[in-house]
Length: 202
Image 1 (tube, rainbow, N blue to C red):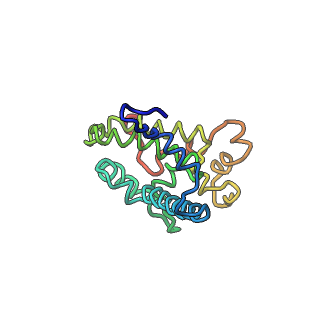
Image 2: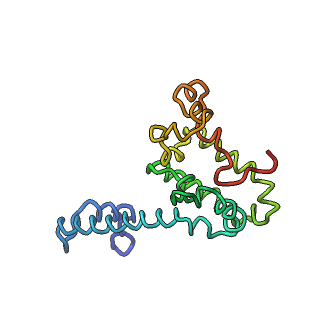
Image 3: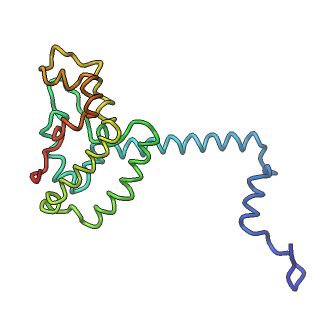
């Protein structure tokens, strides 16, 4: 550590001071108290993180922007994913946000980095703009679902839980293991336009 012309020592740099604070126990508080405080702060931060993730996955949050409320929600509200005889409702996150942590965080980051800027740039702020991009948006989702074997569909729908007696012959054949293995098809290949109407340009 060098001294200036008055004989006073230079103060350690920020990184060195930070490392010392991290590496040496506090003279005021014991190590146990510091560890306990760290656990409490960490638990509060973790819980807060989960609250934010849950809130940003709610139907209310998803439909809070103009584009979703005006152009996407009306389609969805008329679909069987919204209202059906069994009373089970699938919301946006059920189809568009993975359940497992890693893919879920990727989806959240992608939405933050891609979808939010598009909202503020006004890319879809009119019906005409939305309609002109609808096929592009749909194909992007379809490709993602094909790549992950319709993972989000299978979070709710199970082949083993399907009753063959309640399905017609075509459905029984296409849901069979043999058909899926032979064709490589997944749910979205046959079930497009379920929660949203298909683009008119298809």
